[in-house]
Length: 338
Image 1 (tube, rainbow, N blue to C red):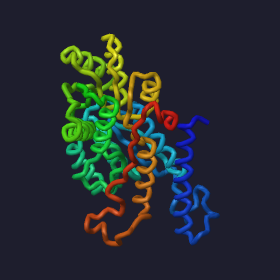
Image 2 (image 1 turned 120 degrees about the vertical axis):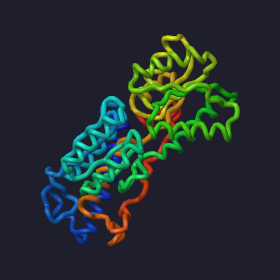
Image 3 (image 1 turned 45 degrees about the horizontal axis):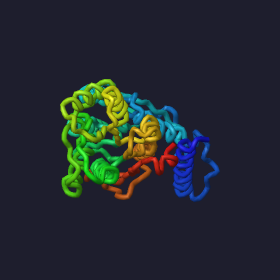
Image 4 (image 1 turned 90 degrees about the horizontal axis):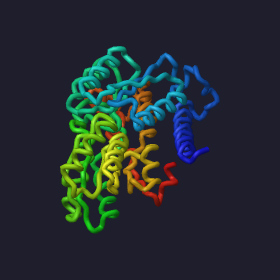
């Protein structure tokens, strides 16, 4: 079994054991009746329960991995899941998709909001209608969502600045390829730039390009950025598809500039292996999906209740934030992520 699949399987097995422990607690230690369809076991669901996962680019490799974790949890619990969102990185399209899914009264929704403020109202409306909602990867902190499951995006940006300082100890001019309007991307790059400003005076961000929505647009944006800023020494792309596009632009310009990124999915692993990328700040998309569904299921079935009357006062029974962590991937530790 490839190491990456082994690690996912091991993670799923560990989580499954944790669920078995919860089952044991709920049943007084007897876990013999845990087959699908056991109505007395609160951790055995039903296929009629449909949970939705909504992001702003369902075809992105990152979100494909998120949904794989969501599906893995569904298989363990015996429930059904669906994946949707907006393919055009358009906040209006994503909000509409969310509202349409919420209107179907699903068992729960996990959403990665493209824009935090745009989702505050729709999330609150869904919750008022009785639909549990959690956020993952990017948050809507002003909403009434029950929990956020994902990366500390600001910390991810700080880690990127640290990696740049490691690979460019003599300094560098940096070009950024971001996604304008995305709360997640903006937070990530704010963390990177704040850390550079405070700790690394020989690093300088000299240009920023809007890479959305895909690799083709990222290539065009990077090409224009390089033409306008020939002094760029290194590029940091906000996601894997932007990495792919930026690498294409660098190759077509016959430059030796490295392009780094924030996702540790397959195209990024390949680019590190080939030497065109120095580092990636890896998130844990599979874990985001997995724990999103576990939390939604617990909410739906009222399995976590530390404050008996907390709901009357707007207190969520779940942690405010589940940090799925970050890792800096380089050639030195690449084998751990393959």
